[in-house]
Image 1 (cartoon, rainbow, N blue to C red):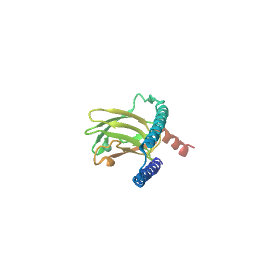
Image 2: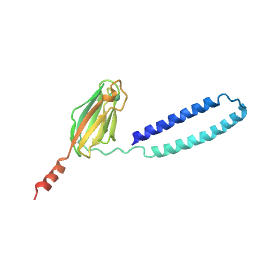
Image 3: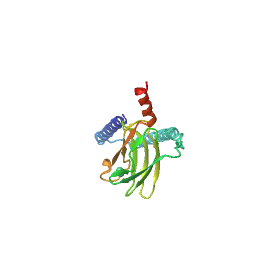
Length: 187
Ligand code: CUA
């Protein structure tokens, strides 16, 4: 949906720029008095300045008022997973987890900066961090649904950036399976 919106907005802006360009070309032969145009321009500039300040103020207010982001409390004893990013792939020390299992991904890189983003089946971003050489960033996450998740690189890192992917499989938790078993066979 955002993808759709992004390209529609891009096309509208491109058409707008083309329109402005054509307008300027069509009117470039005309001669007119400079003074009134300059006055009008300055007036527009003053109003535009206030509009931009107001828009930026509002945007800042609505986007920053949640800061600092609450750090989700993480379990004392999470499953520790090493994630090593490299041109062009990820090496995960483990890639199958249970629903509800708290995980601490310890993310690093062996070459350049990469990003690590975990996406669900609808390609919605669930968690992300940077993979940096000589640093380890810990990303805590607990999967809530079983399924197949994608790990994608979020930082342009070279010619093979787009092929940097990995897959994570999440299986139902033991309790969940126990309940299902009882429901099926427990009478
Ligand atoms: Cu690694 Cu982009």
